[in-house]
Image 1 (cartoon, helix red, strand yellow):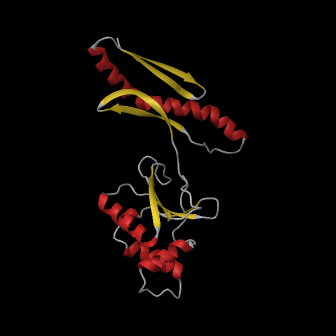
Image 2: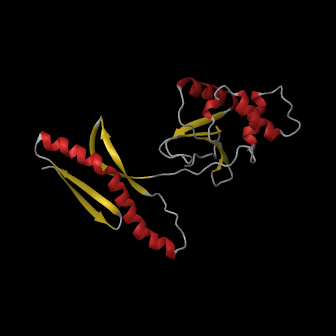
Length: 209
């Protein structure tokens, strides 16, 4: 008989051990794992909320730093026991029209030299960057994140990107002296979006989560 041994603690579901000695039991075990995945997540969440909820109430806060969850493990179509991961969340950017930094405005002036830059240069830069760049599909849930040392980074968190758009972004950055990186920790929808970080190619700028 296939069986699952669930080990619990104040931290939730710590371990799930599985045992099977025949092919039939292995098949049954896979079905048990699939059938219990949601229940295990709910059990884990209930235990964590019970113990951490009391501490949160005492501290008058319900914010959990890097919560952990149980997720289904699917290895090339074969189900395995659920595994625990920490949900890492990036800082959400402020609105792109909210005080765009000087490096961005100057870069846009180089990209669009024929535009009128006398009035509302910051607003003009943001509008032109979004509408005038052929990779605008990359700009989703985008805006500015301060690094904490006075520098602002341009953050975008799309759901998907293709090779051509990345090449266009790379060519643009080369033209105006910017650079970009791609990171896995996002703020908009962790696990579904990723983060593109754009900054000037200069010392003093660091890429933050």
